Image (cartoon, rainbow, N blue to C red; front, side, top):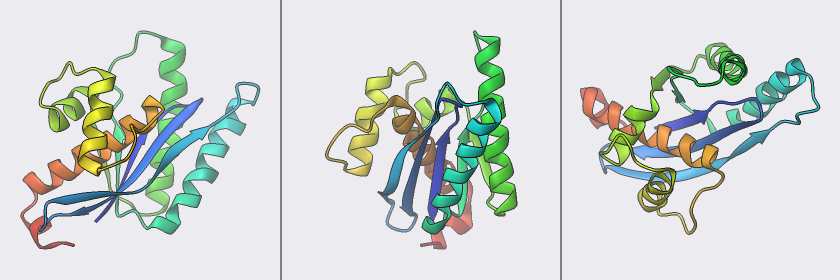
Amino acid sequence: MRILGIDPGTATTGYGIIEANFSKDSLRSVKFGAIKTSASSTPQERLYRIYKELNKLKKYKPEVLAIEKLYFFKNKKTAIAVSQAKGVILFWAGRNKIPVYEFTPLEVKMGIIGYGRAKKIQIQRMVKHLLKLEELPKPDDVADALAIAICCFYYLKNSCKRCEKRS
């Protein structure tokens, strides 16, 4: 199963596509990176760029989209911008008939580290280890997107009996 993990943002949207084999309990990285937009662009230009870049990822045939659940923000302006980016991403998933799973940062940290207050570097190291990457995934948005995808794999594996027969 191909899982596309997304860490939404208007300046930087991290993404990571993993191949999950439930029967072998294995994961591998397919593609990861960041969609960056210019601060000098209008909000609609930034959101449209995110949409266009997501369309380029369709060729990897993601079957599931896992995205960070927005639940708390210190900065209202940031919350609105991230929510707009998330809306575009959810629209894209709906248009492409890709099921969506949402996970809070706490759920992701618990899911892959086992500790809800894990630091960014711990997430990066665990993602590197689980996906057998040569280097730490950077920037943080990319590591977070891969972590969200991995968390989704564990969620599906543990909550879905038919998942054992997939891949």
